[in-house]
Amino acid sequence: MSSGLPKLLIATEFPPNASGGGPAVVRQLLKDWPSDKLAWWSCLPDDQRPPELQITIHEVAKIPRKLYPHFRWMGFKGWVLQKVWAPWAANHLRAMIRQYRPEVIWTIPNLWSIPPLAQVLPTAAVPYHITVHDYPDTRQSQKNMGQERARGFLSLVEQLYTQASSRDVISHEMATDLAAKTGCAAEQIFNAGIEPEDFAYLEQKKTIGGQTIKIAHAGTIIAEEAFIHLVQSLTRIRQRLSKPVELHLFGSHSYRERSWFASEWMIEHGNLAPEKFKVALRECQWGISAMELTDENPRYNRFSLPSKTVTYLAAGLAIISLGHKDSTIVHLARKHSLGIALEDGDLNKMDELLIEGLAEEDAWARYGKSILRCARSDFDAASMRSLLHAALGVHH
Image (cartoon, rainbow, N blue to C red; front, top):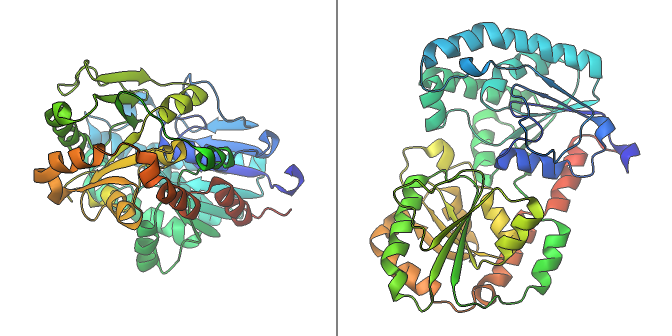
């Protein structure tokens, strides 16, 4: 297989083994890519996590930790990064391209990687494929770098997108938006994917009984206000359900000190190894995928899609989705019958909707066929890898 794979350079802000949904999607799409044909350029170094992806070289145009714009002096730090660090990082990337001589570059423009990527890639004489996971002008990004700079970064992303040899995005909504703005259509929609072994599991999945209703939340709680609404509703209705409810939290962030955390029915598992996580998740019946309830952050709500949603589908969990009526998670819930779908207008009747939904004795029997249809139509990992290989110029 490797004879048909070109020398590939990944260029982005995050390191190869970073935590989070975006890095996990990239690693999944690179499954089976030989390490001797894979190099990486990033602005942030790898941490001490066990490596999930092997590469031949990783060069870091390191952003000094104290200069990364968080909390204090954000305007000044942003100015220094853009005027001093970004030109240096661009030269650093050019040097790596000269040294490694990739046949193709795959870029995922994210936050502070955007200025050097925009300076280098369009004139690098190497074809590049672009993946857009998140827009750089979300509410949090504007808070961290300022509205004007965030909008400038968006303009750079649109230029990179227009000049790329091929393109993919994280959601259908983002594809439509970028096509309208740039006149260039994304060839593919790539999100987290469901692997062949997971499809094999889903095809033979049996009902999980038990004396409790186990609800999972995987990864970081991004839309915490919406999540709290859901937790408060579950708190109110616990005694009205036929079985006790357990909320299982998986991921590297601890929420034990939050005011909403209730140790009598919430369990923190921490950041489990992939196989242990898969086994533990499959023991649950439901997964929570929450986006923001207001439209104050439309650049996140309307175009990103939480990758934890796909994680639940792969485990055969019915999904409790919650978000603004125009959010991608609500659009997905309307398209497929995956579980309990809650919109911003449902807050006053959330208790009754959850009681009705969680009364389902066999969530898999009710939603399993829809979960499989959704998984195959939108989130087939093997199909996505094949399409990415074609975009990167693979010849079998």
